[in-house]
Length: 235
Image (tube, rainbow, N blue to C red; front, side, top):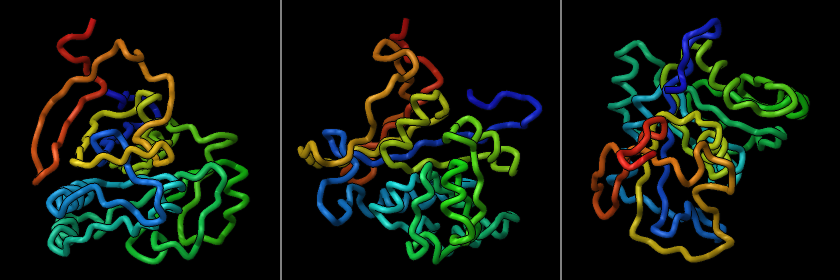
């Protein structure tokens, strides 16, 4: 697991959540968001958000999808409050350049927000956003990001994308759990965004994740992988 004991405290458990087409795309190339999930899967994701201390996306997803990134169920929000938690999880954006639109839906709704960026990005943002802005130095170091979240008391982090963020976490070996919902859709457009970017992943194609569970959500397959544990055919 990626949460060693030490002076900096424990890193949060990292759950990477993604919905993909059969051919591995997370959207099409059109101007409107392609809804890969069905209603039951959207509800499943809402429950995962409600169970998380924080939810993270990248600036690319913020610009492309303009999400609110909220827990939509009033019942789930009430249960969080009953448990002594904030009504909404901490919502986190990663933006190396700090190019974030203050008019985006993300900044208009929900509770506390956090932006991880570089020194240059923090200078660009200034005081333009209703969020805590954290500079990670010259580059965005995702291990340092997790250390900082751990110091803030975050024990569970749900990473919702997009592709460059998923790639960064997986290539750095920082994902504890991967939930992949596969929609019965073929996108077939090389201009569309894929789940992952080319990268040097730990172990490359010779390292197998462990498939921990296979489920069904309506017409979608749900695959649960544990990236930190090798599959039965590894080695």
